[in-house]
Length: 306
Image (cartoon, rainbow, N blue to C red; front, side, top):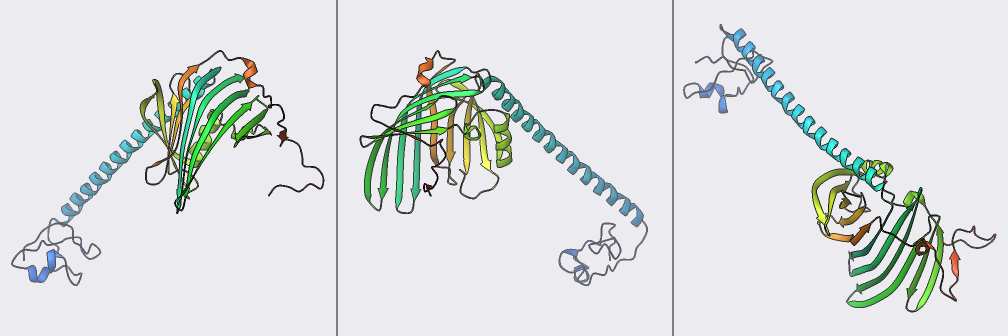
């Protein structure tokens, strides 16, 4: 039988494996593996050299793997560093933004078994910074089409939302019946772009910085966010477009697990640091419309809303 100083498949037995050839294939079994786990070859000279050579092979393989892992770590570090630089740049520049005005468009689609709702919200948006407070005014018309089991219903309403930095006032006119409400600003839900926002994003999403893009003539950073916990409550994929010059979020896209957009919010005709009349952020209800004040505690004995 021909001797070959290479690793035996049954390493616990000897460490030397004879390669099968036509003459002794019956002894070696299929492909040179031992059927009974016993190596039929005597351990002649050269087995020590074989073991040493195999050790060098193992070391070389481990070294190659280490280099590969190091390269991946370096690349990942560069990616994370680029993401952090973009976040820091956004926070720095949006912190210097004093005001802005724009056209606002929001399109949304909801599909479920036997039901489909499509809506478009379009109008104007104005915002000013007043110290730590954000004031804004949004005037839009909302048009929606609802289809349920073959029946279609169209709904149109006008909405005015004014935030004076402390309270949010909402005036909705649907079917010619206006209603107004007053709520206290919840700063946890204010959507202020800062480091805390990105910290919360990193906890809930896997973030990725995509190549820059242009939105209505505005150069933007593009962030991709995928939820770490996929439970259907959050979009499967979200895209956020931040102005590279002012840090403002000019476009947002939410997608389902099929890659279809379910909601798109976009600002166009944007003017940054616009001169806006402060009176635009003071709310006055139309004559005859009573404001439902939701900031007051409920009356004793009054029933709470479910």
